[in-house]
Length: 439
Image (spheres, rainbow, N blue to C red):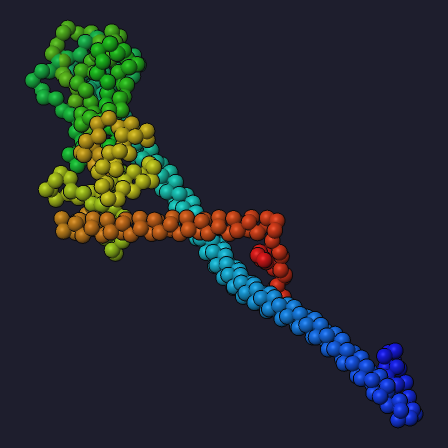
């Protein structure tokens, strides 16, 4: 209790205990007490007002803190929304990466399958090439053997006829023992200029051309050739298998007849090829011709052609496709131009690159083809090549887009790894997401 209150109580007690004479003094003291009480009330009011102002200040501060709290909560909500969006984007990226991985695995499987098919095709082509080479070698050997036998038989017949003409009064049976014992011919061979030359000729169907390049050998006719060189064989093709005069020049002095000079005979070949030899030659020519021909249905491939059909000579009834079997190249649109470029390049070193030469070297004859069929085939071939080019361009653009997206993801990851970022760990997954907070 304060001193002013104690004094007031003492004054009040004195008022009730004192007599009336002292009433005036007591009233004055009471007034003083009232004044003191008013002063006390004023002090309390001022203290209350100061306290009230302090409370208002505290309330204002609390309001400001609430506003700041609401702002932070709004920022947290926006960050949470961004975090959810990042989660969604990451899920989409994961799904896209999984799909791309599946596509890559599928493409790898397709590439492996194509590679296996290509290897099998290469093996089959090698086997076919080996078989074709063996057949060609066998045919060449058969032809060489047949021609050698024909030449030997022609030489023997010529010698026999020369011996018979050198001694017309003797029979062949009387001359046979002398020939067997001595092994020599008369010193000079008789000549018969009135008798025409007989030659063994190849049929016109097997004549050398773009379809039959069979190496028919012939006897060399060099004047300086001796007895050992009279049977030399050249690999250049020729229709005449026996050269006149080669046998006469190959006979030495020991093989000349002992009689005087008589008219001689020009060599001839009375024997023709046997049936088996003709069959072998016909079979070889058919194999060579079948390897350079193809039907239109095989070129058209039910509406998916890969070759352009050309008409050569222009305006004729012969149609061709061009391909290089040595390098396994199929020429599509602009086949003649592409074939010429390929032939003049480092692969073939062709100098005479005319259309006829290109057709003879790379052409394959198309059976059952007309100008209308060739036009339809060429149009569809050009459309297929254009579609393939568009698919290739789309795949390249897709690959470039994937590469740019991948670069953007890598750049964002590098940016997120920089300092000044807050790492927030998601509750749904164990992935760590980088979120930048700006205050």
